[in-house]
Image 1 (cartoon, rainbow, N blue to C red):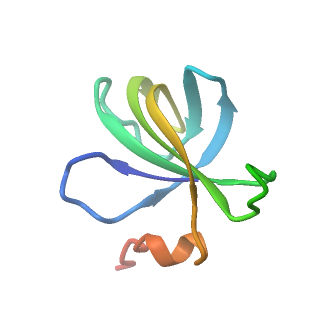
Image 2: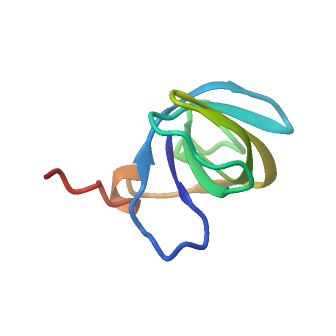
Length: 98
């Protein structure tokens, strides 16, 4: 799972793990807490066929409702299933390691 703060002008994606997901929300394992009200963009690899396409990613805009170190819960505002020919890594920049 990859995420970034939406509309921030920052193209760097962070990494995390999906703990739980429903039609209305998602619970993520993210190292640092994110302030409530922050809108995130979230990208997930979709592991099942979707309309006969194997290369599908779930994209969502979600608003953080609560966050503590290691866990963030967000309400899904909008979502899409997107198909890509290139691996997900080609669409996001890794954070620079100091």
